[in-house]
Image (cartoon, rainbow, N blue to C red; front, side, top):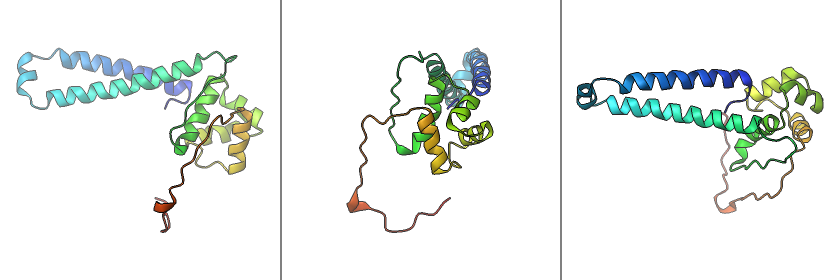
Length: 158
């Protein structure tokens, strides 16, 4: 996920580089394409990386170009993706990390650190401050607790 302008600029450069590399690769002699059993695998790998980068760039552009006067609906398919949703909300609100920090009553350094680490180091209270600062509302929420398969062994970090 692209989280800021610096990452966006770098991703744009990578897209240009992958496109250039692919055009050189595609211009290879037809004999190489036919006789090198790895040619298609390598080419498909380049294309896959390029497609993934373009998807991330398009998502970032959609978020930063969103009309801030219009609410945005961000879907959450897994609770583990909540940190990315918060970052997307900040981008769609056209807030810098400093502006979000000011609104949330935190330091810019904390927001930068939290976003760099996908909020893994954020305390629950800081996490809630950020949610409140972005005015994120849960419209519909369902949590499935499969009691019949509930884990009874400890989970270890790692």
